Image 1: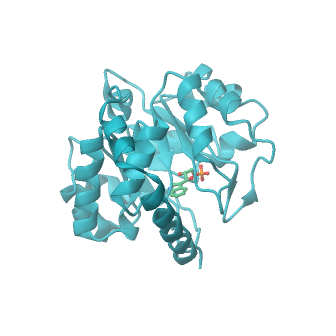
Image 2: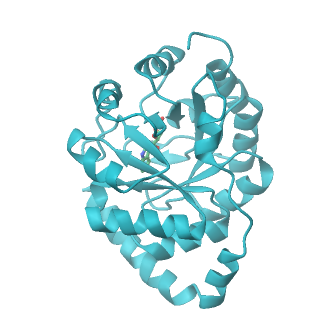
Length: 261
Ligand SMILES: O=P(O)(O)OC[C@@H](O)[C@@H](O)c1c[nH]c2ccccc12
């Protein structure tokens, strides 16, 4: 089962990280300039919901999505195409991502960069900040309430913003209590990989105003994008659809330019 396997792999990585990341590294993280705000990119005077475009070379459900992925060229295309932020999958085993890709993307674009990975321990937050992430993903279904609160608090202490992802209504109260910067509604069930845009439509009305909400996964057309916009999201996160198009710039543009909103 994917989620169990991934947590196992992460635990191993975390053990290595605990040995390799020194106290000096943490001091260095404290001295870094402030992050580019993901929350700001989604809310600051924007009439139209923002596109968060993802660099996603592969996935556990689809296998290889784009074998020749060039993260920097892709991210630059997304930026030119009008994306509000870039998400970079850094998980190695199932998504063929790399932390170095995030590092390079951060230097190549001016947009906020989100680290998409499976974060379980505070040390991964420090690692993310040092690699240049502006925001990190946390997944509510993987984390107990206390741990979630600790990780959000610690992320803020490192200067990072947090996108906290939910998939079920039952996760909402613990997610809101943790006070993330942005809430994500994942249309994909990470246990079954079944995707349904109705998940965003169902959960969104249950979220109080004041926190920006994005819809994630399963958007494969302008029509899908507009459907989530109509549901009331502040942003839409898309990976696979954009990665499969020949030109990332044109693909992003086809969603960000014109249309109903
Ligand atoms: O490729 P899609 O269906 O457009 O989905 C993008 C993004 O939402 C997805 O990659 C994602 C959402 N939550 C995650 C958690 C872990 C790994 C990946 C994800």
